[in-house]
Length: 233
Image (cartoon, rainbow, N blue to C red):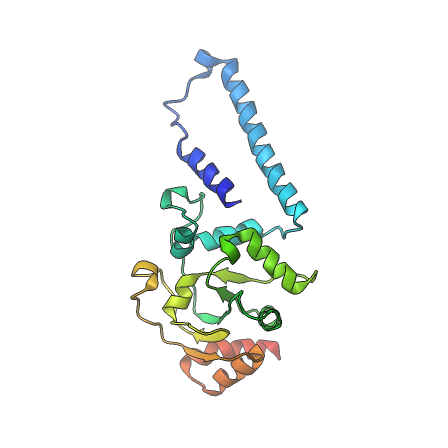
């Protein structure tokens, strides 16, 4: 799917300006034929995407998840996608509001990863991963599906290595709570960015327990955690 998106971007970037287009008076039926061909190509691509989703029983928002992940510079580098290859509407950087994140890894034991994903979905906390499984959106989606074994997998997760770098996360699962709005990286991949003020705790225990420990600290950065716990009562 990513290659298809890249191809589409390439083609869009090469469209001629209105002044360069041949006029209807000079090319007549040729223009109509080409327009019909373009419509057919667009319908064909959409049909192929629908067939792909049906064949693998993928959720409808898989494309949106892929596009969100492409907004991260390291993900684009890992997939060998240059700035000129980005689909229309995808920014080169992203910004997160302050809040709570839980960092996880697809290498975690399956029961532990399932517990983290389930707890995070129930509490409305995004799960952050360092990268795709086998650098593939489809492999990642299939990995998550295998964990849930037929259950609903429409839970939010983020592929963003820069968040791991920004908060210096080296162990998973780790819960981070911050009031700092995360602007785009000032340095390449956030490697030399200042670590935002935050509260954190790591441990392979239910997320509610980790939230409660941070909340008891009653620091400024514990506020997002307290909001989640109050809403969960």
